[in-house]
Image (cartoon, rainbow, N blue to C red; front, side, top):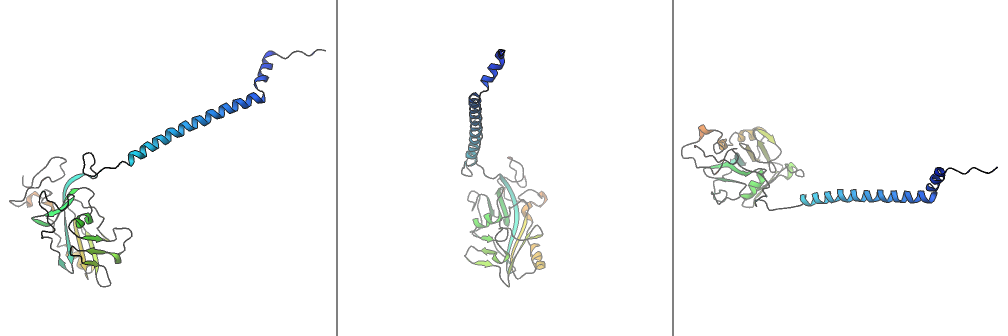
Length: 246
């Protein structure tokens, strides 16, 4: 008996699914997947590279469009005691004049020699100290121990912790390990004492830190004396400048 011929559709399907044809289809599909993956990779990588390039862009602080820290005008009190004696900052080498500041970010000037005028946010106490010739290394740095705490004075003398003398740091009535890397804030009161004092004696010295930073900061208008020098721009008033007594 003669075999019946296979239906045309079945013959056509079998011819399309031969190993040779299937291999070609797989290769085409694989090539498409690889191409798509490369496009996605290049697209993501290109974006990342672009973003990294933006993040690496540098500029010089203070130039237009490159203010690294916010401009402010705040004030804080501080005092340095060495062997129980208050260090005198009423000397020309420490004082700034308007337009002739020792440092733009933070400085002191008449008539209050224990008041820091802060003009840039993020300014630390040691940034200020360095601008007037002092340099403080204390445990506010992670790698510095109490025994390694030292203060270099403008004349070159270096005071360091030892078996008989040590440093005390008090901020707003609270004893802390150090203040060198601590940011200065409005109305802060900071004591740095070096000597043989006990904790209780150091706290007594803290009571001698003035609290008149509120006057130039306009926080205690009732205490502003007649003839108080005019501040260039003070208080938290954004871009609006205010004047003591006015």
